[in-house]
Image 1 (cartoon, rainbow, N blue to C red):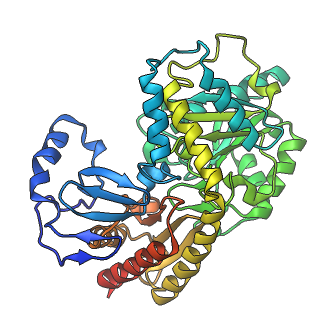
Image 2 (cartoon, rainbow, N blue to C red):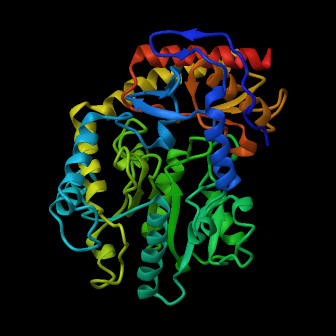
Length: 453
């Protein structure tokens, strides 16, 4: 697996309105900090560009030595409303200064406010919300609710169907229901009633007919009456790939016919990222449950699962809880974040900037047809999928080299993801303006040209 250089290298200086590179990278003075992190944390926590963040300003990230990057990561799709927003900081500080930092499930005044605000923004039939801490927790809860409801219908109705190459988190259940074999090889005793079927993205899976879903279940010897839930990422996080719309609409009909809950993992897609408030809305279908996180607070650890009261109230008081559920400081951040998304019309901005982004990425793909196999995504999420010339084999080395070039030129991305680490993932804060977006797209074009020509 490629790694970013750990020895400082002198680079051509960069100075624009939004980007500054004025030191060697990594910054020599940052090396003791990087070494301390490597010494005391597991190596699994590494892999990102070696920048010591000082702070973020909207869609920019600064280090301590005068370097500045246009951020194409949003942390990890968290800062939808931008980094370091004063409104969120003020809300967090005010709540912290009140003296109430945590109180488990005991009521506090922000808890009901946030729950109401979330439900108001969700489809009308999803009239209850369960706040949690991480996206993985929401997936675990979704599995629990699907199976609990299913077994009230029939003792055998407990099969969860998900999709190949899907990622749903790092916990045991979320990795078992995920579709990436390498991430769950450690488990050993996989649940045979968690079944994956191909994801119809039109690139890695050319067959987008719903017949493939039916055939895949038959091949796995799954009876449709035994399925309690179907779970999918609204778009697959590694490649920003959406499923075929007609396929998902037929899947919705199939779920209705078989009394199955259709669950969308919106952890990356929610709160405006795709140019709609919830990404699954692009499919034109009803969700029975949605799992959210990341952009929900724009900052602090908070997640939430939405469902109807019929589903959400399957468990009595005290039996479906979480230690930091609706933590008051996280609630304060989330309320301020939701208000920012609405007031600044960030969903609409994501749609407008997304049109520019995807139009220009289409042009870049035409410039490098031998190296770019596909460009997927909607709104302000995209993935440029690099392939080896003359085929569709993922080219992780080229993808990594492009991300390194971007980092050295003042645009920050996380390390390549997806098939073989071959997807160059693009996810700036939803506050990015056209000038900064076009500048960073220009840097992408330059970086690809520097690597492949």
